[in-house]
Image 1 (cartoon, rainbow, N blue to C red):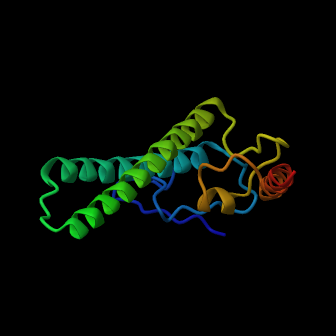
Image 2 (cartoon, rainbow, N blue to C red):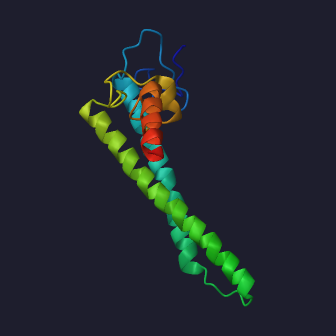
Image 3 (cartoon, rainbow, N blue to C red):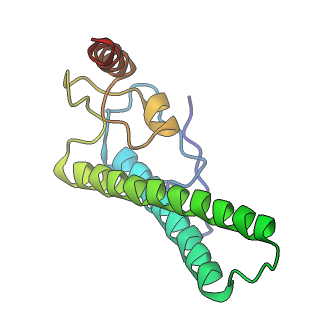
Length: 151
């Protein structure tokens, strides 16, 4: 794969932000500074997006009041808000995982399986930047979890 950059005039490829066009080159060292910068940028953008959504939800909650005169409409609105608040709670937990991934980048541990110590594939990290295990280790973990639940 070739590296693709979204560069601006006056910048060299080395100075260019990683952006969505970044692709690792064959033989490129795993979790080199460019890859770390790319994943940091990706994680920070994801976190900012989640925070913006939650601010929108908060603003909506503060401006909307439950004024539906019909009890069925009111129940429907309450259900919708309950689902929205559960979603925000899951996203709050996701922000914690994003922050943990950023800490792992800072500590030089990002991209390596917490179980085996092996590198997590770039494709997996691209799809799930907060991954802490290789696909194989995750599958083993889930199988063990399923067995222990069934007992």
